[in-house]
Length: 546
Image (cartoon, one colour):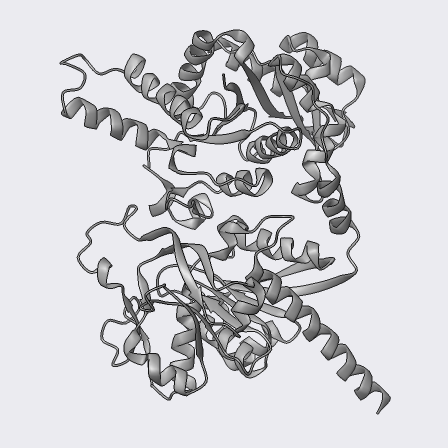
């Protein structure tokens, strides 16, 4: 029977519950347990697909095309598993299902209520996730903060579910903040006590506390929290701020979190093989070089909008024993060639990520032109590939004002256009080309060199594509289409062979990168960036000698 771990948060939002869930999952996986992780989000949106990145950060896309919360990216990266739609449950999706059932007469005329219908649907999603993955342990993270009105149905559903499956088959972990007051030099436990009291008032007594803190927690604070929160002292776990999220599993392991979890769930206390993870963390903490990568996008005010891109760059850096410094560039600030040079003169590589809408597009085109003309290693992702095609059409092919019909429907040169299957679609939610699709790679290309195979599967999230009317023209003038759909109709990867590394793809490789298995395209970018830096050093040395 699957065992369940429910993770709630208290005191403040954005505590890092997702990292705690992912880290615990990693520690259990390294003990040979099969783990799946599920996220319950209280917002009324059916999924985050239509939400602004400024509101909710990145939309993470699963293999099955589910548009999900960014925490699912952390889950996949940490436990190295593929998750699906059932792993991300929102209030909106629950209410929508219940209303659809009511309209279809499935409740046989009953009055539809929060209990049992809404809570019953939430519980059914837990069971569905367990049946689909058949894990030994399912970790369920409840978004938001205990006490939020929109989260109450989820808390009540968990209370009911735990009573139904038996105390020995589940546990509650409450993640809270211990504020540190530097003026008095004290950690304050009272907010956490109040938070636990709120959770208990809803009928849930946590078996474990995970305490976010800036400074180490003293014995007195642990004993006080154990006493007032009715939690075993050994299950009061410190989670200090770390330099890297990938250090968190090892720090929690030192606190014996997994031992206490397995004891509570009455599971075998297996030995963990953390060798690979420890080696990776060592490389993170002891880099042999530093590289500066420019990330030019339109949502740079909120780093979470590009979190999978940032983590993928770091993953490639780990393997290359390089610290990756991200230089954030708001593309709408790039207004002239002087602006472009001022922002990019000191970078070792450039990434132009995905996005939607016309804002900042001209700045992205200037960034891409700079990368192409100055042979700076470049990786374009989704919209980044479309912009690379537009820039090439304008500045190499001489097609003045070439554009995407997403930005200019009247352009004479529609080098990027709406996909045929998208032309009759109404509405926005979950209507794009979403999820995993195959791509055939041309042998001898740079893409083939890093992938090492001719057929790959990558995740998509887009409506527009390269217009095949321009395929011959663009190939004749030096841009290679090195990856296509298996039938050859859709351009999936483009590159410029004469550059050291100028590669762009229509898909989102960042969704499949892992901390100990960097994605080939990011690996290629970082390797090329390291060579670029060495080349610059050599040239500077020669100039100095002269």
